[in-house]
Image 1 (tube, rainbow, N blue to C red):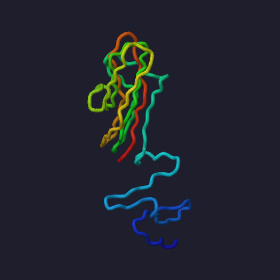
Image 2 (image 1 turned 120 degrees about the horizontal axis):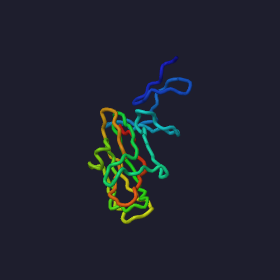
Image 3 (image 1 turned 180 degrees about the horizontal axis):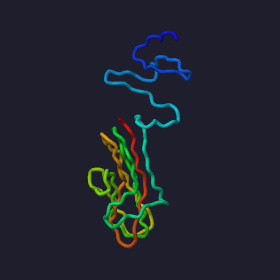
Image 4 (image 1 turned 90 degrees about the vertical axis):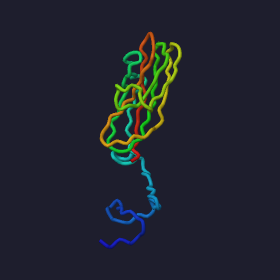
Length: 175
């Protein structure tokens, strides 16, 4: 093996056959940090790396019946490991013939918290119907020191038939 050529501000890398070299093209060193080029293939970042995504989706055909009027119901959950995550959701209500006065979705680390906290969204769905209503919570950042489960929680104030909930809960590792 021969000596590597010198290079300033480079990263040690290897080619497909294992030959080492210093890469100075896939990132830019700055005085306040560095920019790193993202993956330019169609593979997702592995677990533990920035960009990792965890997603749980409940399709409309598998909608979950809400537990009771103004009772928090878990629609789905995801387990996040230690790190910094951006968490978001889209919650959809299938009125199922019910008369809904109001409805809320939230992202919580406990179903018992219902829609308490700053990460909730309320919607007004109006009179009885068979249509769907939806609300979303844009991404917000959580910093975790250990594994924590987050739930997409929904509740509605309604009469007549039980509305159902479905949607998507997702998180992207940012640190």
